[in-house]
Length: 288
Length: 314
Image 1: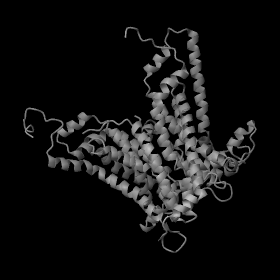
Image 2: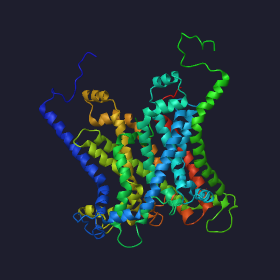
Image 3: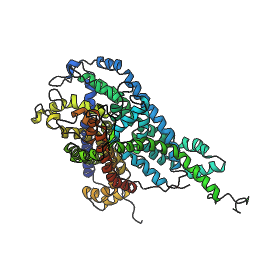
Image 4: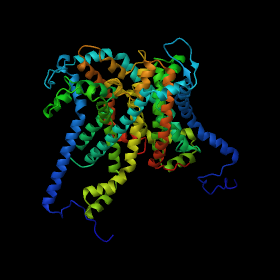
């Protein structure tokens, strides 16, 4: 610890080397931009096509200059009503249920852990690994007997189970970060467990709770397999509206693009806003 | 017990609990866990028990006869069925290829994003977007506006390179479906690897630089070992989701041409929805679950290693 720490890139370097470093940096920046635009291109093309009149969407060569129109969006808005409602109800309903169930569970696996908290955690995550597709036939039969087929309740129930393990893991990771001293202080003040949760833990982890809810919203909103197998009309969701926008014959590309844009935009915006917490959510709390 | 009421001394943080109270304490701890635990057991385990039961029954939706016991004959069918085996192999190929390629691209993108350059935030935002697009929308947009042989954008962009009106979904079906899965999951891998890169202590990197280590050597000797748990986590989580991939298969190729893109989820979907064979699908499902459990056992062990558990106390 006798030598002064030399900071590379500082004034000691010859000018030429610094210049080379800077241009190298700009070069990699350009590469990054090119990659990003290429990667984003399909999304951009979807949005562009959505503004085309149907006749301009299926031409060779593809048209880049055209008179934009909102007519396809209007068509989508007039047709998607029930699908949108079902999607919103299933997404919001299941997310509320997930939060209500996962907060106490995460508490019991972190702050005042049960004896076998490790086994509990792994049991929850192991249910994510069981492929739900394997049980789709019996699930259909069960739903039929419970008169839940084609009902929005069925989707709420299943989406809750789908997101619950993820939410428990995530919320647990936030709860572990609540300073011990605050919990001790609350206990000394005579706070019971419920007061401890509502008065101390929840206010601290509320940003984490929001990002957990957002992740659940994304997965529930995008889900297709269960909806397609277990609903027909009374609970059909937005992904199914997309499918219905592809007709057997006739031009449909602009219409499809408008529908796909509208179906995707809510989640894209949510994801853009919640970029920072996205990583943590997707890694189920493993990455801070 | 005698220490409890000493007055002057602050109460010890870890109280010595009498036996009766510790049992009550145990239940107080367990109680908040029960609703979620019961919920997940009922909703996720019962369907699998019913699947097990139906796998020994003959039961067709389109036949009025009630379900009846037929022993292992559904299983004999599954094991002698080339369609099931084929879909199993395709599932493995699809999952492995898409996860590995997405991870390699993810590492490359993360290395790019870890540098400072103009508009880094925008680039990052653009790169994560494919992951946020609804998978059904992504599949349909790729199948139509992007890959259509007659008016698709890709053929237009590739025309200068001598590509003329390729019908991607008929001639390169499996590759196209996998490519879309890679497109959607690369951002996920990028984000996880990027988090790893940004958590790398900068002083060791600078020390390596001072010691004259080249960029490649630094990456191999320092960065890659540091990234390992992040890469494992990304592969693990990506596999969990991608092994269930259904949307792209159903909406881009409908499992075809022929069975070229029929993976397990799509095969099971067909068995139930078009063959109405609940018993056969259940037996195939049970076999799938058993295979999954074998893989998941390793996966869970990896999970335990990757998540360095902060010891809970209380």
